[in-house]
Length: 125
Image (cartoon, rainbow, N blue to C red):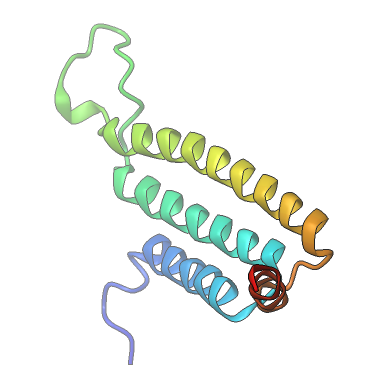
């Protein structure tokens, strides 16, 4: 039923499950706060996946210590940099989404995206 690498790659499997949970939350809920939460869950899954791909057992962070400069002693710093950059971008996007949600709530007095769509079409006529 499961492939032979499922238990050796369990971080990747868990990140895919978390991503699926976030995606279904984003797609199935009508509440805008829940959609933002689903988006953040998806971000977290991507960060877990990148961190798991960048980790190599038995190696340490790429900080030269004790004069050891061999490449085989250190992990790749690129996935960690991508995760840090992604966190900064995701915090900014979340702040923007929450600010827009507050503006929409003050105007339409609801967080249901279908009701907001209906009310906004009624205002245009």
